[in-house]
Image (tube, rainbow, N blue to C red; front, side, top):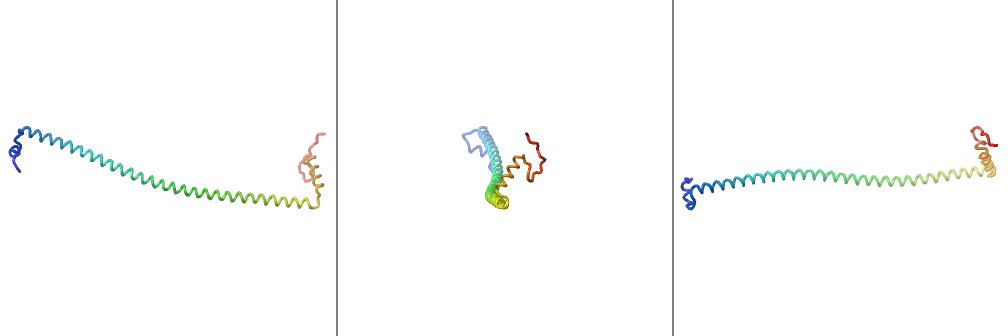
Length: 147
């Protein structure tokens, strides 16, 4: 290692004090740049951590979104199945009503064609309505008529 006097002899245009001041100034600049560099490195590290956290959150949100979309499709399929079942039930109900009406109409027609004639039936209905529900098969107590 060269001694300090040899170093100063290599820079004859500068005085010893001036060289010392230049070295101090350069050392301070280097120290400041090193501190700035360390601060930048800390910021980069913090940003990398933040990026990793955001990436993790994004992955979680993506999985949740995929699950929601899957459930949406399941619900849509279920809705279509329910609509189909409703249509089938409505059709069956309509058929049942038609069958029931047809059955009652047949029974009524059979009743009309049996021993009681139409005029007798009409007379019975007229008497019951005239007597305010009193008459054949009526279980109500007789009402007093307004006379």
